[in-house]
Length: 385
Image 1 (cartoon, rainbow, N blue to C red):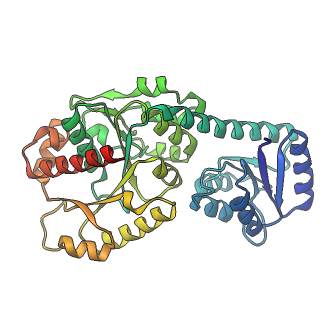
Image 2: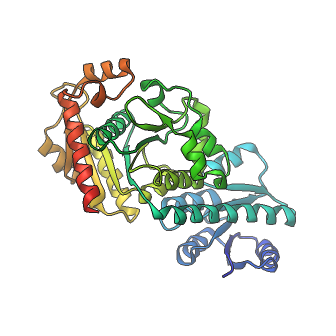
Image 3: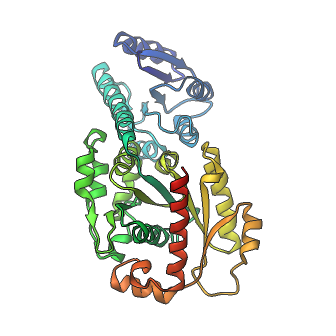
């Protein structure tokens, strides 16, 4: 079956010429003359690639891209923007809203064909990687929060350590926040380049063997895939197909894969959440955190993810009377809380000094025991799946 390309452009001549040229290359062509029509066709037809003009009267290409990336049906469709704009800032905006590639008009037919082939091949590589990895799929847990500073990395690391403590199986802790990495410094393994290398390369290069070779063994028993601390690497969050391929390969390398996904719902997180077996949302018992978390859960459900696979961890990081009681949190959140963590700043400080998770450094600590209970609950869900 021919691959389908949707062209969205208000210029009739461009629609006709580009469509005819790509049709001669064997592609099936669909066309839309404005952004609204293009969005409707993308949802209905689910093309393999979208060629999108930026300058359109009713809705520009940036807004079309934003809406495509917010919808789970279209979030992973490659988008090639083409426009008469030549300013660097315009290209940066295009990439920031989720475009995969960018060409400036007028574009030579050979150049356009080359970019189209690369994008379609990249998407095919991801599909093949995900399909081939289904022979053995580990239990993948995505850990995230509505906003930063709520302890996502601590929860992810200690859940991973708790699962290793209980099973002695292969447990992988992957920190998917390039440019904002903290686990490397906390666990005594700074300046890791593995994730950066995988994201900077092509999707086809994300092989099982390469991913395995880039995992770092930690004295806690965990295998680590850590994000860099270099702020400029945050731009790698645009490499959505690479993220998909990495998760697909990691799931073949461990019984459990714990993903530290940071905060919010950037495009790559929207794409990875459906690949997880369950999702853990970290919340703090204060009104602002609860309100943001409620919105986050609703948006995750809008990604066609079963609410039952979303588990909330109430992380009371500080000893303060401002923290709400469990029943109050659940009432305002509109969602049950699966686990509660009591404040233990001294234990976490000591664990950082020892460069290991709290569960390993102080296993008898009350908070460590709470993490172990959380690990036990995950084990029960793994058995029941």
